[in-house]
Amino acid sequence: MPRTPAGPILDLDRIVARQLPNGLRVRLLADPTVPTVSYYTFFQVGSRNERLGTTGISHLFEHMMFNGAARYGPKEFDRVLESRGGSSNAYTSNDVTAYYEDFASDALETVVDLESDRMRSLALTPETLEQEREVVKEERRLRTENSVFGLMEEQLEALVFLAHPYRWPVIGWMEDIERITREDCQEFFRTYYAPDNAAVYAVGDLDPDDTYRLVERAYGDIPVGPRPRPVPQGEPPQRGERRAVVRYPAQAAAVLVGWRGPAAKSADSAALDVLQAVLAVGESSRLRRRLVEQAEVAVSVQVSWGWRVDPGVFLVFAELAPGVPAERAERLLWEELAKVAARGVGRAELVRAQRLLRSSVLHELATHNGVAHALGQAEALLGDWREAGRALEQYAAVGTKDVRRVAASWLDPARRCVVTLEPEGRS
Image (cartoon, rainbow, N blue to C red):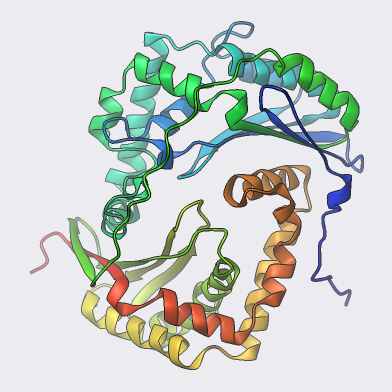
């Protein structure tokens, strides 16, 4: 069986990193093994950069970016890209908004033209704003208001954070989505979609020098934007457990628990990834064995630890079996977490989790798209694209003592936030 090295698997020395005079960062990696290119544009803006009254504007803008600019009008972006055999998509998170295209390498100049056009001259018309506002409102109804997890997650983030913008959902509050104005969008675009708040990552069958000159010609005259407002950092310490109840028509109860964790840059982030895998990834994970298979109090258990620029949230979500009270499932959950905090995990559990994480990293770095995304994520969350090549080393360095330590320090019962789903009609 071939061994996979724990060290760097990205040849960081082959990545060409430059910056235009207007601040646009450009990261290019030539890989001619397949005649395709993936092209990512990361804007350093997400719900973290919003303010009350216009929550959700970052996600709304993700939709607005496909509605035409000076050279390519409404709906032209995807039509032109698809005519060259390419495809596109985008996402918004708490910290970033990213757009990407996958295409045959001979379409690179077209993609650079498309992306630079909308960064320079996006059309923000009242008609497109109203159109996309309705699309986003429907998305919110579907993913949050008619979703058990969506409703509970919204409540949980508001419990975990009292002051930080992470307290509101990425999609925003419905009333804020309805009140965002065209002027809000224009200010948002000037500030956060300026070249000095963005980075381009192109990976694939390309010549780095030629590609940089192409990018320079296309983006070089786009003006810099105003300096973004600082993100509030006055989150007060949590001094006891916080709780909320969601009542909603459902077959059974559910429990969602969250703890405020560290920022992505923390040395504990990798150990929390390992803890996440130990607890709930795969059939033999701890919480699945205890809550689903042995006690049969839950039908599924998920654990989520997502890296964020500022301190994020470690989540545990359990969908309970019909008739099981939340209190019973919680008791078992607390017992299992307390065991990890007190005794740690076994060597076999650690190795299994590390293998799962290693596979996930290798899977992402196996494609041009995955490499471009990993570079962008690393720079956006950790401040340095080179961190994308160090993930395997970080996971390999985590020991059983580290897993025990982060479980004890970050999953403190006195600092947990608990949201329970109470099926409507249940006494």
